[in-house]
Image (tube, rainbow, N blue to C red; front, side, top):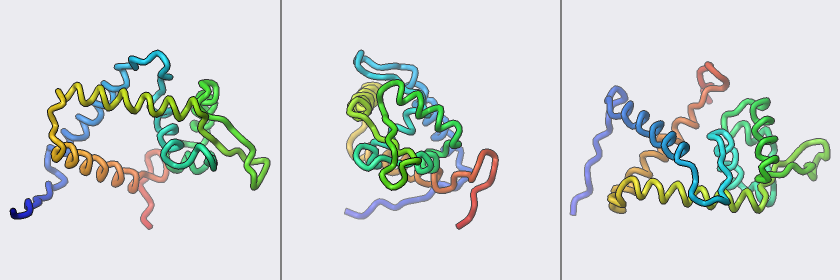
Length: 170
């Protein structure tokens, strides 16, 4: 069986804009849907970004410095402080004094924060699978995931240094 030939789509291909638009619509539809499980703690998009980073990057044991969270999520430190306060009020994170420097904070997910992340992640998957009519075969789903991961990584890798600023070249 011959390998499938890849034909890259040029940057001005209108399908890229359609992909971006569909991603925004899908994200919004997932957000407005809410959750079936009454135990699920709803999160704003920004809170979700912070919890995703913490849950995927060791926020449980080692904790994470706020500056690292800000850099990873693209948030301004002042905005991050507000988000962290909200997540702490919801019982999803806790601040601890850093073992290296007692003046610095280290952010840790709580058991409730980890459980909530797994719960909402599962509901998102169920909602998307149901919306697609469970139609995507494994190959198409893997291809879609590959493309979306590449887009995510490329966008994060070229994130502007600050609002309205062009990215710095390394």
